[in-house]
Amino acid sequence: MHVMIIGAAGMIGRKLMAALARQGAIGGQAIGRLTGVDIVTPDMPDFSGGGEAIAADLSADGAAERLVASRPDLIFHLAAIVSGEAESDFEKGYRINMDGTRALFEAIRREGEKRAWCPKVVFTSSIAVFGEPLPEEIDDTFVLAPLTSYGTQKAIGELLLADYSRRGFLDGIGIRLPTITVRPGKPNLAASSFFSSILREPLSGKPAILPVDESLRHWFASPRAAVGFLLHAAELDTGTLGARRTLSMPGLSATVGEAIEALRRIAGDRAADLIRREPDEAVARIVASWPKKFAAHRATELGFRAETSFDEIIHAHIEDELDGNLPA
Image (cartoon, rainbow, N blue to C red):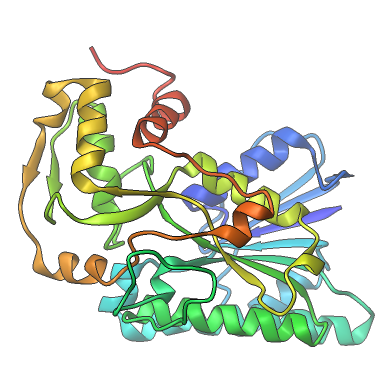
């Protein structure tokens, strides 16, 4: 089986690559070839089968065609620029997030016309596809009405995935990720980046900035849960989805204040006191337009699982990124 991950140099992509290399199989089939693709050459994990790393811009002319010429059996499409950058750079956001996705799906369609081929495609979407006015809890039938360019680009990707699947060009499943917290590494340009930094930095003994009010409520899951979502989606029988190919993933609805209190319980006052309050109206405006809670019944009935407390999310970060230890 040939598995390709587009967006393999990103945080979730790296973790997914490592999980697949470690497992060596998915859906009961051995992985004979594992390909990682990103705008920069991704690092390849140790893998007993054939592994390759490719640097490619999916939106560049001919790039998607060259990638799919190897006819992977399973493609994870994770590549995107993040919410804050998509909002500040309109042209780049649409080129990467919309044109790149369309280019991939079109390349798959044209390759399949040469000789029968219908790969499974797992596409990562976002809860940013929903916009105000929002109910307290969003169910599986709520309308897509994004209020950011990033959310609009992801909503277009969902529609393309459904239509190309309906036509039999690919076998797609989309997963709307909660905000993934705690992300390792450094802050990025996502408007949601602070959700991780207010926990990650204090857990390492460093200061962090909180740009929004502690009463802000949001929808979360850990990187560990995100990788689990992707692996489960890849193994799921898409015949259970019908025409609605994208699912809202389960997660945890919590306020920023509740996240900070979990940090205080686990790492003490010294860690929590490293958070500085510096309001940023632009960031607050973007994240306030995002959903706060989901009734993700379809996903949970299909076996997707996430954390149920912020303590679990923080402990997952400590175990996976800090070797189970807090700084002295």
